[in-house]
Length: 388
Image 1 (cartoon, rainbow, N blue to C red):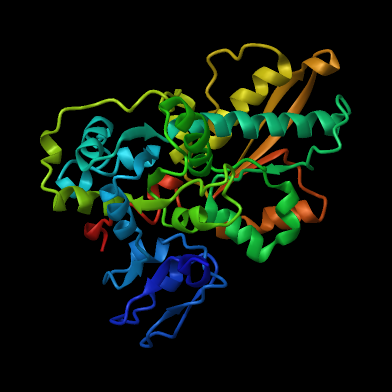
Image 2: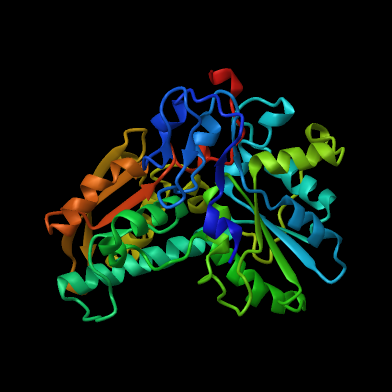
Protein backbone atom coordinates (compact mmCIF):
# COMPACT_ATOMS: atom_id res chain seq x y z
CA UNK A 1 0.00 0.00 0.00
CA UNK A 2 1.15 3.54 -0.74
CA UNK A 3 2.95 5.30 2.10
CA UNK A 4 0.60 8.24 1.58
CA UNK A 5 -2.40 6.03 2.34
CA UNK A 6 -0.79 4.67 5.51
CA UNK A 7 1.08 7.71 6.80
CA UNK A 8 -0.68 10.66 5.18
CA UNK A 9 0.53 13.63 3.17
CA UNK A 10 1.35 16.24 5.84
CA UNK A 11 4.23 15.92 8.32
CA UNK A 12 5.63 18.08 11.13
CA UNK A 13 9.35 18.52 10.57
CA UNK A 14 11.95 17.70 13.23
CA UNK A 15 12.71 21.37 13.83
CA UNK A 16 9.13 22.22 14.92
CA UNK A 17 9.16 25.42 17.01
CA UNK A 18 6.14 24.25 19.04
CA UNK A 19 4.42 27.62 18.71
CA UNK A 20 0.99 25.93 18.62
CA UNK A 21 -0.32 28.08 15.74
CA UNK A 22 -1.02 25.01 13.59
CA UNK A 23 -3.57 23.67 16.05
CA UNK A 24 -5.69 26.81 15.60
CA UNK A 25 -6.21 26.13 11.88
CA UNK A 26 -6.58 22.33 11.96
CA UNK A 27 -10.27 21.51 11.37
CA UNK A 28 -10.19 18.12 13.10
CA UNK A 29 -7.83 18.40 16.08
CA UNK A 30 -5.38 16.08 14.34
CA UNK A 31 -2.34 17.99 15.63
CA UNK A 32 -1.23 17.16 19.14
CA UNK A 33 1.36 18.72 21.45
CA UNK A 34 1.24 21.51 23.99
CA UNK A 35 2.72 24.96 23.58
CA UNK A 36 6.49 24.54 23.79
CA UNK A 37 6.37 20.83 22.89
CA UNK A 38 7.09 19.43 19.45
CA UNK A 39 3.80 18.79 17.68
CA UNK A 40 2.81 15.77 15.66
CA UNK A 41 -0.03 14.90 13.32
CA UNK A 42 -2.35 11.96 13.98
CA UNK A 43 -2.90 10.39 10.58
CA UNK A 44 -6.24 8.83 11.57
CA UNK A 45 -7.70 12.33 12.08
CA UNK A 46 -5.77 14.26 9.42
CA UNK A 47 -7.61 15.38 6.28
CA UNK A 48 -4.34 16.02 4.38
CA UNK A 49 -5.65 19.52 3.62
CA UNK A 50 -2.37 21.31 4.34
CA UNK A 51 -3.89 24.31 6.08
CA UNK A 52 -1.39 23.83 8.91
CA UNK A 53 1.42 23.76 6.33
CA UNK A 54 0.60 27.07 4.66
CA UNK A 55 -0.10 28.74 8.02
CA UNK A 56 3.02 27.60 9.90
CA UNK A 57 4.98 30.84 10.62
CA UNK A 58 8.28 28.97 10.60
CA UNK A 59 7.81 26.69 7.60
CA UNK A 60 8.25 23.60 9.74
CA UNK A 61 5.45 21.53 8.24
CA UNK A 62 6.07 19.63 5.02
CA UNK A 63 4.28 17.35 2.59
CA UNK A 64 4.91 14.06 0.84
CA UNK A 65 6.25 14.72 -2.65
CA UNK A 66 5.65 12.87 -5.91
CA UNK A 67 8.13 15.00 -7.87
CA UNK A 68 10.76 12.26 -8.17
CA UNK A 69 8.35 9.80 -9.73
CA UNK A 70 7.02 12.47 -12.11
CA UNK A 71 10.54 13.33 -13.29
CA UNK A 72 11.33 9.63 -13.69
CA UNK A 73 8.24 9.14 -15.84
CA UNK A 74 9.19 12.14 -17.97
CA UNK A 75 12.51 10.48 -18.79
CA UNK A 76 10.97 7.07 -19.57
CA UNK A 77 10.61 6.61 -23.37
CA UNK A 78 7.82 4.10 -22.73
CA UNK A 79 5.67 6.66 -20.92
CA UNK A 80 3.32 9.11 -22.61
CA UNK A 81 3.07 11.79 -19.93
CA UNK A 82 0.14 14.23 -19.94
CA UNK A 83 -0.76 16.91 -17.44
CA UNK A 84 -3.93 18.56 -16.19
CA UNK A 85 -4.06 21.75 -14.15
CA UNK A 86 -6.87 23.02 -11.92
CA UNK A 87 -8.48 26.48 -12.31
CA UNK A 88 -7.08 27.79 -9.01
CA UNK A 89 -3.47 27.17 -10.12
CA UNK A 90 -3.48 29.78 -12.89
CA UNK A 91 -4.18 32.71 -10.56
CA UNK A 92 -1.52 31.71 -8.02
CA UNK A 93 1.40 30.41 -10.09
CA UNK A 94 2.59 33.92 -10.96
CA UNK A 95 3.25 34.86 -7.32
CA UNK A 96 6.53 32.89 -6.95
CA UNK A 97 7.82 34.77 -10.01
CA UNK A 98 7.12 38.22 -8.56
CA UNK A 99 3.88 38.84 -10.41
CA UNK A 100 0.97 40.58 -8.63
CA UNK A 101 -1.27 38.36 -6.52
CA UNK A 102 -4.19 37.05 -8.57
CA UNK A 103 -2.56 37.51 -11.99
CA UNK A 104 -4.03 35.01 -14.46
CA UNK A 105 -1.01 33.24 -15.97
CA UNK A 106 -2.92 30.47 -17.72
CA UNK A 107 -1.20 30.98 -21.06
CA UNK A 108 2.30 31.12 -19.58
CA UNK A 109 1.55 28.05 -17.48
CA UNK A 110 0.59 26.04 -20.57
CA UNK A 111 3.78 27.16 -22.29
CA UNK A 112 5.91 26.23 -19.28
CA UNK A 113 4.35 22.79 -18.98
CA UNK A 114 5.16 22.11 -22.63
CA UNK A 115 8.75 23.25 -22.12
CA UNK A 116 9.01 20.86 -19.18
CA UNK A 117 8.25 18.07 -21.65
CA UNK A 118 4.62 17.06 -21.23
CA UNK A 119 3.15 15.44 -24.36
CA UNK A 120 -0.28 16.97 -23.84
CA UNK A 121 -1.33 19.90 -21.66
CA UNK A 122 -4.96 19.89 -20.56
CA UNK A 123 -7.22 22.01 -18.41
CA UNK A 124 -9.09 20.28 -15.57
CA UNK A 125 -11.99 22.60 -16.37
CA UNK A 126 -13.07 20.05 -19.00
CA UNK A 127 -13.93 17.49 -16.33
CA UNK A 128 -15.15 20.19 -13.96
CA UNK A 129 -17.89 20.67 -16.55
CA UNK A 130 -18.48 16.91 -16.58
CA UNK A 131 -18.69 16.97 -12.78
CA UNK A 132 -21.31 19.70 -12.95
CA UNK A 133 -23.38 17.59 -15.34
CA UNK A 134 -22.96 14.45 -13.22
CA UNK A 135 -23.69 16.10 -9.86
CA UNK A 136 -26.49 18.17 -11.36
CA UNK A 137 -28.14 15.16 -12.99
CA UNK A 138 -27.81 13.14 -9.82
CA UNK A 139 -29.45 15.95 -7.86
CA UNK A 140 -32.28 16.07 -10.41
CA UNK A 141 -32.91 12.33 -10.02
CA UNK A 142 -32.99 12.69 -6.25
CA UNK A 143 -35.42 15.60 -6.49
CA UNK A 144 -37.67 13.74 -8.95
CA UNK A 145 -37.67 10.73 -6.65
CA UNK A 146 -38.51 12.84 -3.61
CA UNK A 147 -41.47 14.59 -5.26
CA UNK A 148 -42.77 11.35 -6.80
CA UNK A 149 -42.29 12.48 -10.40
CA UNK A 150 -40.04 9.51 -11.16
CA UNK A 151 -39.60 6.37 -9.11
CA UNK A 152 -35.91 5.54 -9.02
CA UNK A 153 -34.83 3.07 -6.38
CA UNK A 154 -31.19 3.91 -7.09
CA UNK A 155 -31.58 7.64 -6.46
CA UNK A 156 -29.99 8.64 -3.18
CA UNK A 157 -31.65 10.64 -0.41
CA UNK A 158 -31.87 14.40 -0.08
CA UNK A 159 -30.06 16.57 0.64
CA UNK A 160 -27.24 15.78 -1.73
CA UNK A 161 -23.74 16.82 -0.66
CA UNK A 162 -21.02 17.67 -3.17
CA UNK A 163 -18.14 15.22 -3.62
CA UNK A 164 -15.42 17.39 -5.22
CA UNK A 165 -13.26 18.12 -2.16
CA UNK A 166 -11.12 15.14 -1.00
CA UNK A 167 -10.53 16.66 2.45
CA UNK A 168 -14.30 16.95 2.96
CA UNK A 169 -14.79 13.36 1.80
CA UNK A 170 -12.21 12.12 4.29
CA UNK A 171 -13.82 14.21 7.04
CA UNK A 172 -17.17 12.55 6.33
CA UNK A 173 -15.66 9.06 6.21
CA UNK A 174 -13.83 9.51 9.50
CA UNK A 175 -16.44 11.38 11.51
CA UNK A 176 -19.86 10.73 9.94
CA UNK A 177 -19.93 7.48 7.95
CA UNK A 178 -23.75 7.46 8.11
CA UNK A 179 -23.81 10.58 5.93
CA UNK A 180 -22.04 8.88 3.01
CA UNK A 181 -25.26 7.89 1.13
CA UNK A 182 -26.06 11.61 0.95
CA UNK A 183 -22.81 12.42 -0.86
CA UNK A 184 -22.84 12.64 -4.65
CA UNK A 185 -21.41 9.54 -6.29
CA UNK A 186 -19.55 11.67 -8.86
CA UNK A 187 -15.77 11.62 -8.83
CA UNK A 188 -13.88 14.87 -8.39
CA UNK A 189 -12.78 16.66 -11.58
CA UNK A 190 -9.20 15.46 -11.01
CA UNK A 191 -10.16 11.79 -10.88
CA UNK A 192 -12.72 12.10 -13.63
CA UNK A 193 -10.03 13.58 -15.86
CA UNK A 194 -7.72 10.64 -15.21
CA UNK A 195 -10.43 8.16 -16.15
CA UNK A 196 -11.28 10.06 -19.35
CA UNK A 197 -7.59 10.44 -20.26
CA UNK A 198 -6.88 6.74 -20.01
CA UNK A 199 -9.97 5.71 -21.97
CA UNK A 200 -11.33 8.22 -24.49
CA UNK A 201 -8.18 10.34 -24.90
CA UNK A 202 -5.86 7.34 -25.09
CA UNK A 203 -8.03 5.84 -27.80
CA UNK A 204 -8.20 9.09 -29.81
CA UNK A 205 -4.46 9.66 -29.49
CA UNK A 206 -3.62 6.07 -30.34
CA UNK A 207 -1.78 5.63 -27.05
CA UNK A 208 -1.71 2.40 -25.06
CA UNK A 209 -3.41 3.37 -21.76
CA UNK A 210 -0.84 1.25 -19.93
CA UNK A 211 1.78 3.71 -21.17
CA UNK A 212 -0.18 6.87 -20.46
CA UNK A 213 0.96 8.63 -17.29
CA UNK A 214 -1.35 11.33 -15.90
CA UNK A 215 0.04 14.13 -13.75
CA UNK A 216 -2.15 16.69 -11.96
CA UNK A 217 -1.12 20.19 -10.92
CA UNK A 218 -3.38 21.08 -8.02
CA UNK A 219 -3.82 23.81 -5.39
CA UNK A 220 -4.56 21.03 -2.91
CA UNK A 221 -2.34 18.66 -0.93
CA UNK A 222 -5.29 16.34 -0.23
CA UNK A 223 -5.37 15.52 -3.95
CA UNK A 224 -2.20 13.49 -3.40
CA UNK A 225 -4.10 11.26 -1.00
CA UNK A 226 -7.12 11.13 -3.32
CA UNK A 227 -5.16 9.88 -6.34
CA UNK A 228 -3.72 7.00 -4.32
CA UNK A 229 -7.09 5.62 -3.22
CA UNK A 230 -7.45 2.06 -4.53
CA UNK A 231 -10.99 2.51 -5.86
CA UNK A 232 -9.79 4.97 -8.51
CA UNK A 233 -8.76 2.42 -11.11
CA UNK A 234 -11.76 2.73 -13.44
CA UNK A 235 -10.02 1.76 -16.68
CA UNK A 236 -7.92 -1.02 -15.21
CA UNK A 237 -5.18 1.53 -14.61
CA UNK A 238 -4.69 4.14 -11.91
CA UNK A 239 -6.76 7.19 -12.94
CA UNK A 240 -4.19 9.78 -11.86
CA UNK A 241 -0.61 8.65 -11.41
CA UNK A 242 0.84 11.61 -9.52
CA UNK A 243 -0.08 15.02 -8.12
CA UNK A 244 2.15 18.05 -7.71
CA UNK A 245 1.12 21.32 -6.11
CA UNK A 246 1.26 24.88 -7.42
CA UNK A 247 4.34 25.40 -5.22
CA UNK A 248 6.10 22.34 -6.58
CA UNK A 249 5.41 23.35 -10.19
CA UNK A 250 6.86 26.81 -9.53
CA UNK A 251 10.01 25.27 -8.06
CA UNK A 252 10.34 22.91 -11.02
CA UNK A 253 10.00 25.76 -13.53
CA UNK A 254 12.74 27.69 -11.71
CA UNK A 255 15.02 24.65 -11.52
CA UNK A 256 14.60 24.14 -15.27
CA UNK A 257 15.75 27.68 -16.02
CA UNK A 258 12.51 28.67 -17.75
CA UNK A 259 11.97 32.44 -18.01
CA UNK A 260 8.36 32.20 -16.88
CA UNK A 261 7.50 35.90 -16.85
CA UNK A 262 8.50 36.37 -20.50
CA UNK A 263 6.86 33.22 -21.90
CA UNK A 264 4.40 33.77 -24.72
CA UNK A 265 0.87 32.62 -23.93
CA UNK A 266 -0.23 29.23 -25.27
CA UNK A 267 -3.57 27.45 -25.26
CA UNK A 268 -4.33 24.09 -23.65
CA UNK A 269 -4.71 21.10 -25.94
CA UNK A 270 -8.33 20.82 -27.04
CA UNK A 271 -9.07 17.08 -27.16
CA UNK A 272 -10.15 17.05 -23.51
CA UNK A 273 -9.28 20.65 -22.69
CA UNK A 274 -12.28 22.74 -23.75
CA UNK A 275 -14.59 24.12 -21.08
CA UNK A 276 -17.22 26.67 -20.09
CA UNK A 277 -17.19 29.52 -17.61
CA UNK A 278 -19.11 27.33 -15.17
CA UNK A 279 -15.99 25.21 -14.68
CA UNK A 280 -13.82 28.26 -14.05
CA UNK A 281 -15.68 29.19 -10.86
CA UNK A 282 -15.14 25.73 -9.33
CA UNK A 283 -12.09 26.99 -7.44
CA UNK A 284 -14.01 29.33 -5.14
CA UNK A 285 -16.58 28.53 -2.51
CA UNK A 286 -20.09 28.56 -3.95
CA UNK A 287 -18.82 27.95 -7.48
CA UNK A 288 -19.84 24.31 -7.64
CA UNK A 289 -23.25 25.19 -6.24
CA UNK A 290 -23.84 27.99 -8.71
CA UNK A 291 -22.86 25.85 -11.69
CA UNK A 292 -24.93 22.88 -10.56
CA UNK A 293 -27.99 25.06 -9.90
CA UNK A 294 -27.89 26.33 -13.46
CA UNK A 295 -27.85 22.76 -14.78
CA UNK A 296 -30.59 21.59 -12.43
CA UNK A 297 -32.82 24.58 -13.20
CA UNK A 298 -32.75 24.06 -16.95
CA UNK A 299 -33.33 20.29 -16.82
CA UNK A 300 -36.00 20.33 -14.10
CA UNK A 301 -37.93 23.19 -15.70
CA UNK A 302 -37.25 22.44 -19.36
CA UNK A 303 -36.58 26.14 -19.77
CA UNK A 304 -33.45 27.95 -20.81
CA UNK A 305 -32.20 29.84 -17.82
CA UNK A 306 -32.06 33.61 -18.45
CA UNK A 307 -28.97 35.63 -17.61
CA UNK A 308 -29.30 35.08 -13.88
CA UNK A 309 -26.48 35.11 -11.37
CA UNK A 310 -26.94 33.20 -8.14
CA UNK A 311 -25.17 35.88 -6.10
CA UNK A 312 -26.64 34.62 -2.83
CA UNK A 313 -24.39 31.56 -2.90
CA UNK A 314 -21.25 33.68 -3.08
CA UNK A 315 -19.30 35.36 -0.31
CA UNK A 316 -16.97 34.53 2.56
CA UNK A 317 -19.33 33.61 5.38
CA UNK A 318 -18.54 30.07 6.63
CA UNK A 319 -22.15 28.98 6.05
CA UNK A 320 -24.44 30.56 3.47
CA UNK A 321 -27.86 29.55 2.25
CA UNK A 322 -30.16 30.37 -0.64
CA UNK A 323 -33.51 29.34 -2.10
CA UNK A 324 -34.38 29.03 -5.79
CA UNK A 325 -37.90 28.50 -7.12
CA UNK A 326 -37.82 26.01 -9.99
CA UNK A 327 -40.95 25.15 -12.03
CA UNK A 328 -40.88 21.35 -12.32
CA UNK A 329 -41.82 20.35 -15.86
CA UNK A 330 -42.71 16.78 -14.79
CA UNK A 331 -45.26 18.24 -12.36
CA UNK A 332 -46.94 20.49 -14.94
CA UNK A 333 -44.83 23.51 -14.05
CA UNK A 334 -45.58 23.35 -10.34
CA UNK A 335 -42.82 25.29 -8.58
CA UNK A 336 -40.47 23.64 -6.13
CA UNK A 337 -38.40 25.76 -3.78
CA UNK A 338 -34.91 24.27 -3.81
CA UNK A 339 -33.00 25.15 -0.65
CA UNK A 340 -29.21 25.05 -0.77
CA UNK A 341 -26.36 25.63 1.66
CA UNK A 342 -22.69 26.37 1.10
CA UNK A 343 -20.05 25.56 3.70
CA UNK A 344 -16.48 26.83 3.50
CA UNK A 345 -14.39 25.24 6.23
CA UNK A 346 -15.10 21.61 7.05
CA UNK A 347 -15.32 22.33 10.76
CA UNK A 348 -18.54 24.25 10.08
CA UNK A 349 -20.21 21.25 8.42
CA UNK A 350 -20.97 19.31 11.61
CA UNK A 351 -24.23 21.11 12.58
CA UNK A 352 -25.62 20.66 9.05
CA UNK A 353 -24.70 16.99 9.06
CA UNK A 354 -26.33 16.49 12.46
CA UNK A 355 -29.53 18.07 11.12
CA UNK A 356 -29.51 15.77 8.09
CA UNK A 357 -29.04 12.64 10.18
CA UNK A 358 -31.80 13.78 12.56
CA UNK A 359 -34.20 14.32 9.64
CA UNK A 360 -34.64 18.05 10.20
CA UNK A 361 -32.54 19.52 7.39
CA UNK A 362 -34.41 21.99 5.14
CA UNK A 363 -31.89 21.67 2.31
CA UNK A 364 -31.86 19.84 -1.00
CA UNK A 365 -28.22 20.44 -1.91
CA UNK A 366 -25.16 21.22 0.26
CA UNK A 367 -21.74 22.21 -1.02
CA UNK A 368 -18.78 21.66 1.32
CA UNK A 369 -15.22 22.84 0.72
CA UNK A 370 -12.58 22.36 3.36
CA UNK A 371 -10.30 25.32 2.72
CA UNK A 372 -11.36 28.91 3.55
CA UNK A 373 -12.68 30.51 0.38
CA UNK A 374 -12.36 27.24 -1.52
CA UNK A 375 -9.56 25.68 -3.58
CA UNK A 376 -8.09 29.10 -4.26
CA UNK A 377 -6.70 28.95 -0.70
CA UNK A 378 -5.75 25.27 -0.79
CA UNK A 379 -2.79 23.77 1.03
CA UNK A 380 -0.76 23.49 -2.17
CA UNK A 381 -0.84 27.19 -3.07
CA UNK A 382 2.07 29.65 -2.69
CA UNK A 383 2.76 30.61 0.91
CA UNK A 384 2.32 34.30 1.67
CA UNK A 385 5.23 35.03 3.99
CA UNK A 386 4.15 38.66 4.24
CA UNK A 387 1.06 37.49 6.14
CA UNK A 388 3.10 36.91 9.29
